[in-house]
Length: 200
Length: 200
Image (cartoon, rainbow over the protein chains, first blue to last red):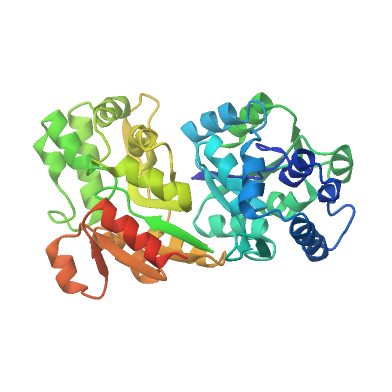
C-alpha cells in the first residue's frame, strides 16, 4: 500500500515568516537560514524580535489568518485526498500552521510547536525531533507503506531521499542542479500526474 | 507533542459488513470473528459469498455510500481535528471506507486493501501488516509523539496497550470486565472531555 509525504510551505502554503514580515512591516522577520545558518540562533533572534515589538501569539495568528493557501493548493490536495492518504510534514509550528490548515480542510500535519507563556507571548520553541521529515518516512515504511514524497527545499532532502520515490515541487534552480536525479514538477497538474504514475 | 490514534468502525462509523448484510439482505455476510475465529477463513468465506451473488466492488461501494457516520461522529471529529492531529487506524479496507471517509471530511486513515479483478470483482485482500494498530502507535512514538488512543473492541487492545494513555469508547461490557484499568467513554462529549484532559 502507498502513502504520500509532503512538505507544506512552498508546496501548499506561502512561506509563513516571510509573510508575517510583510504584513507586520518588520523587515527583520524576513531573515532565514540563508542569513543566519544556525537554526537555533535564527529562532532566538525571531523570538526576540517578536518580544521587542510586543507581538504575542494571537497577534501573529491574526496576521497568518489573513494569508491564503497557494493558488490551486486546496483543489490539488482535495483531489489527492480523494484517492490517497497523505501526511504533511513541516518544520513550521503547529500554532502558526493552524489557521491555514483549516483553509486546506485539515489534512494531517506533523510539525513542531511553540512554547507560549501565560500572557500569550512566544517564549520558546520545541523541535519534535531532529530529522523529523526523514524519520516520518522511515516510520511509515515500518508500517509497510511504500512512500512517495515531494518538497521544494533543502530541508526536504532527508525525506525525499528516504522515500521510495520522490519529486521536487517548484524547487530553486540550484537544488535541481545539485540533485539532478529527482523528478521536478512545477504545477499542481504535473504533480498529480506524477502521483498517479508512481502510485499504483 | 501529542497525537491521537483511533479505531473507525463502532467509534465513528457503523460496522460495514453488518450493514452490507442488512442492505443486501445477504444474512451470511453478518458472520464475524465471533462465528469464524480464523480471520482468513472468514474473509475467504465473505469473498465467496460476494462472488456467489455476483456482487462486485462497485455494488458494495454503492451500498456503503448509503450508510452514514454514527450520529454526532462528524461533529466530534471536526472538534478533535480543530485542536489535535489524529490518525484513524482500522482493519477495514480502503475501498470500503472511502465513501464514508468522505462524509467524515477525510481524516487520515491507515487500513488494509482489497484486491480487485479486471472485471471489478473482489478477488482477494491484503493485510498491510500484522498488528497494524499497535505498530502504528509504535511508529508515532518513534516520532516523539505522546499517543492517546481509543477504540471499542478486542482488535484495538494492542493499540490501546501500546499508547501512552487510552480509553475504550462504547465497548462491550465483557471487554470492560476483562480490562478494568482502561477509562471508558460512552458519549462523544465524554470522549472529548477525556481527550482535553489527557492531552496538554
